[in-house]
Figure 1 (tube, rainbow, N blue to C red):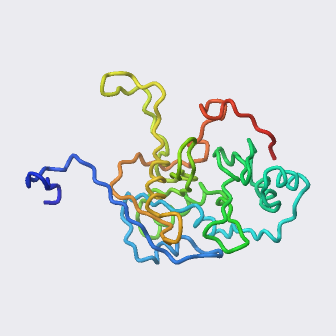
Figure 2: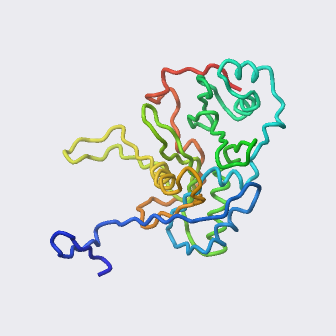
Figure 3: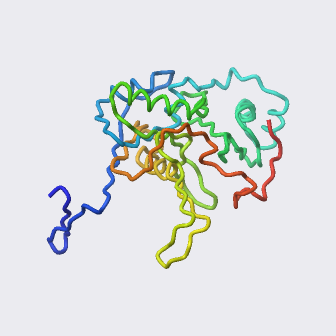
Length: 273
């Protein structure tokens, strides 16, 4: 009955060999608050990783593994950060870190600066205070694409398993309530699928459609991980169709120039670092 599914209403079985079934499996890991070895924590979790799994890991968990935590009381504040903190009601130490981490600051509102970091539109440059020790903030991972690549290589060399790796973050979407997922970095799969030139159900040629594969996987991961005290910073997605790649990816493989983005093209940077 491996490839059969039972219809609850009719009681009949239907062959599912042509239907792709996804498994989404969270991995519970111990809480961490200081630098640790990411690969060791994952393989010592007791989870059985399989060939072609997609491993989605919280970017915050990745950052903590690198020691990307900053104590706010140790931050030296510039006059620019002080001015911003007063204007937008942001703690001056946090404003300073945002300025350091941002590639560009677009706008501000009470409590937040809208920034671009490595091509990603992010409030406060992705800096977060949740699920870290009191008085500290966690930054985005350092060189996340290289880290994802090296993590993938460790699984391949040590365990003989070919995985795809995605580092995910939660993100607000324009005009929508609540968070969804975003891929900060990826390795082992093509992060975007170009659908241009294909035809839809009615024979119309697709001219602009591109599927954000890595972001889709990140959203599944974020939904499963939770946002509070679940302590499940990693998720396996099994059975997913994906185009594998061995090439080195960068953030440019998953981003678009602001001048070409329908949300961003009319928003100019107020100031950049």
